[in-house]
Image (cartoon, rainbow, N blue to C red):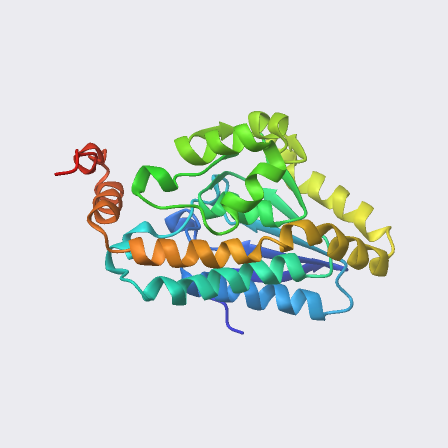
Length: 265
């Protein structure tokens, strides 16, 4: 496939690197980006010479800043279902890849960017990385596994803080709460990732595939929740509240959500 939004490379034996490659827009993603991510992970999974996959972002400042929010201004009920299929395809490809996947979080991982790194098996972050969600700030919701996976990483209370308040956290804070495995100086990120790749490659590939499938079981039982969420957010897609949040985000202003908090007639 001729990728436009990502790069797929095998720069060293047995290691595939998938790079979110839109640095001019902070590696923000669209539905088409997720189709490319899905295709790349299927390629890595089917290539029997690959033993580990690295997911990272182009440039020095952003892993992935989330989706291209401006596109949500044109979404209507029904269109979100199409977009969701692309999101789900990418998520299933990452989690279903029979090789360990390491997120090299080289910068900001916000919104779907944070969810992408959570879908990976391991995460190593630059000390310059920032992680968090922003859905509630713009009348959105982190339904791309965010609401279902977050509590497994950081616990119920912290998960509700992250998702309800749309706060951002330093790499060190993310490490302390269990959102990433290790934090290293920015300049050392890819050297550290290489060291982890070497350790993975010392393990039995069939054992790793079995272990990953087994460890995914508990979270895979939550697939029905994704489809419930899909329908809820799809019906909300063109509501006035959603439009206010999205427009405010695009215009760089604070949304006025209090106008939707009125007493019933």
